Length: 234
Ligand code: ATP
Image (cartoon, rainbow, N blue to C red; front, side, top):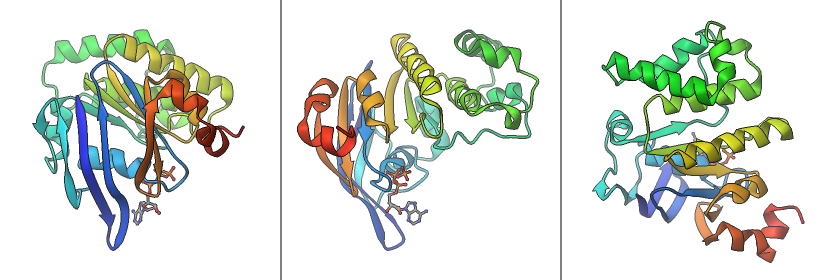
């Protein structure tokens, strides 16, 4: 469904990605694990065209989307939940969600997507009129995911959904990610919490200083001695 071929990206003179190749198949959860600064966020931003790759190609459902404007990429069916959640703190929960569907002019459809998000996250329904900045961290993460789902993506990109959340909340967020996947959305999940990410993923890529150094089924990566020492704290 998504294919990156030798993607290179820079911030000025700094090379952040040195030739990333990866594939996400329809229906699966793929994860990219790696330390702080490895290039995980840059990879997601490059897929969404928030950063233009210096070279390399990105294909989505067989189409070359490299360097296409971000709104076209959203229209094609890719949504991203950014790192640190980035909800609009002064807007209400409902307004944040509606913004996620800003490209959709079909009001009936937007209403039905909203109902789907409220079914997945009942807490957002009960807080629909509350300003987003007053939600807890976990609720803000739910809102950020809900907002991305309002665009009805085929592929959901998640940037470190566990960041700054208590273990219990992380578990419930990961349960919801699994549920979203079971309901038909393909997922590319970027995480520093490798144990949690690999526990729900089908396959994983290990990213180190802008390079994929390992890729395998999530099951095998969880058993891999190098992964265990470097990323699972064993
Ligand atoms: P984190 O978990 O901290 O988000 P990451 O794996 O997502 O880490 P990136 O944020 O993609 O890593 O960063 C990859 C490299 O690019 C790092 O060396 C980082 O310092 C650098 N970098 C990231 N953003 C910028 C920027 N706006 N300008 C310059 N360099 C940047």
